[in-house]
Length: 385
Image (cartoon, rainbow, N blue to C red):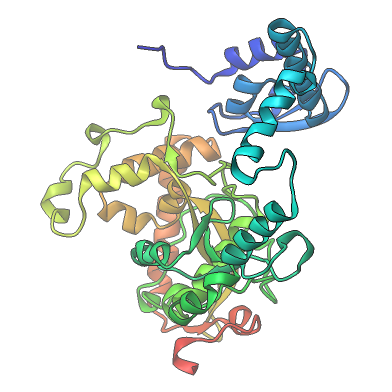
């Protein structure tokens, strides 16, 4: 059984020496295989890659990586066949001609072969030459998770980079009859991106405003558009702790939390609503979530949506501390808040007290919800549609 790789500072230092690249270690707060590492290649170009990619393919810029790959191919060709490029050999040239001759009775591509290519393109894309046409494009779709198998049967494909389902011209009619087209959101008009900065804090929503969040006020397809926009504009990084969350994976072994650390008495008040194993599984999984930040006008009783930010699940759980308590994970939330803000236990207790007092006062007011940054962005509220 192969030994598990420990993605730590010591390994990164060894890779820096191996590849003769310069890495600024002072910028790295946490080590795991998915962190982005900025480095200077030995040629002088600056570049960045994930820790995992540096380990596998080296700390080189794009140009040097291409050169290294080409040189490796040449070395292999010389070692095995005594030529830099195997296609230079007459034997290889003759071998390449055989499939064409066997299939079409010609040594090189003929009109018959070109017609076959056009026929295939027409079947796949409804046009003869996808390279010369503007007709071929991905039409992205809003496909709920529970309908993914159905969309796949109808010919939809998944774009792993954008995390969206899409179709091409040949099967768009059937899919668009069933699923709405995904329309990109370019901005949230009137949003205050600086509101409350990047600080991590407990942000308790008043009881009088529960279940009046953005997600419950708009349609699912519009919430999907907002989430995608929020995640993409920060390059899938948590805006509080900086964790890269594009890929939904488990934390490294050192960061995994176990049920022995969960709150005492969890089963006494919580067993019917939440499952501790499921909640811990979520806690130990790297994933990005959208969180709403509000301002409160105590004079006019207006609770206004100022900003939507991207948070990892752990930072989001700290923010919604009341719900996290119900899930039995307040101990984990406290540790995470201490770690990110570099607080002492005394500071944590003072923060709890301060935020609880604010919440109690806000509970006395019936708030008028202001979602103007949503409606200004041409997104309809459910009750207005």
